[in-house]
Image (cartoon, rainbow, N blue to C red; front, side, top):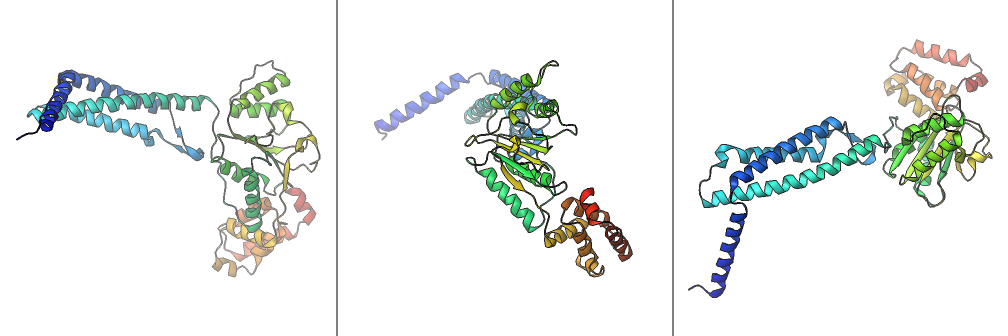
Length: 377
């Protein structure tokens, strides 16, 4: 004998089914709506792929629209809709089958609605990124070789992570010593740490306007043709103020004495969570440019590190080394610990196993005066 509770429960279940049935009673209308939503979803996925060439992800790495989760989910939803709209699957074969069909159609319509709202937000953000400043791209750079360069890079990273004490970092040293190389590694490291990471190279003929043009290009700041450099500086400052945490890298800054504020480049203060990093061959570190900068001098490589770099870039194995009677060591030693010179010589000898050619290269280097070698780098 049924209890009162079972009777009431059965009545409630029945009412729920009838209510749901009335809400979606016209399955043909629901299918027509589903068909329109699916076609709209397919069109938006196609439009999204056409307008956006890439989606930016963490670390500055890029992936194509086809790899986007939203695109993949859209394709799955369209496929499900096509299956439900198939005339064979649409034939009702009983109360429960028909009820499940109504449930599946209603659920899929809700999923398509959520997907559409997400797609609108994603497309708007992607278009903003395409029109606005690039958040940072991974710079192609070879691995660090040697104990001393690795230690220098680790020191730079530690300073980079210290938001309170080191907002301004100046990397200096002679030409060819590896300043830009280390700064490129620091730039790539910063892609995971900051909202925006900018890389700017100074023009050969350094002027206030040329640097402003270079910086404006990466932060997407527009200048009028008649703007004075002071007006351009104000516009640049306003552009930086709209950004979140950023890191700005200035490569090959000349010996000219200037103030960053002249250019509209903000000099991060303590605790600002922003970084200004530059490299220069200038020895005038007491200039106004380096006021409150933490300076890091890049020195020539010790002999062991120089030899390791030479072997790495020349790509010679143990068998080849043993047949060259110590010439690779002598060649690396003649380069005075300057990485640019080491890489240049090693690249010329890459793939060469003939001892006579190695001896000839050593003879050419030994015929040069060491002072001339230093000046030619």
